[in-house]
Amino acid sequence: MARTLFGFVAAAALLLAVFMPALAAAQAPAPAPTSDASSVDQGVAYFLMILALVLTYLIHPLDASSPYKLF
Image (cartoon, rainbow, N blue to C red; front, side, top):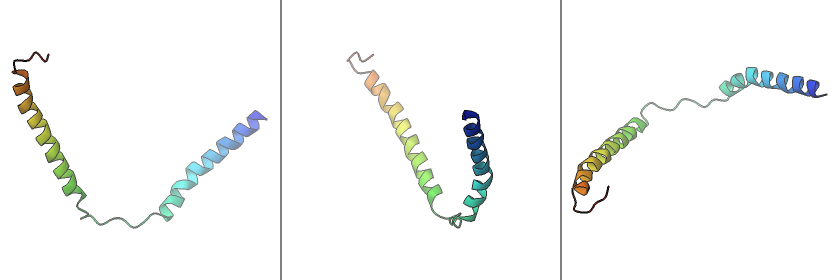
């Protein structure tokens, strides 16, 4: 019984693995336009992350030189 069930599940998984990409490709939407400004947004995000990193390392030495023993 368990061997038959395992065989059925394995066959179903194999069939799904073979035929699902073909079905997904048939229902795929049209490609998005290339000028959707996501690269501009990503560039701005990288710039802001680098700015935050630089400011963190500029401000951190000022905190470390304070009279309080932080570390």
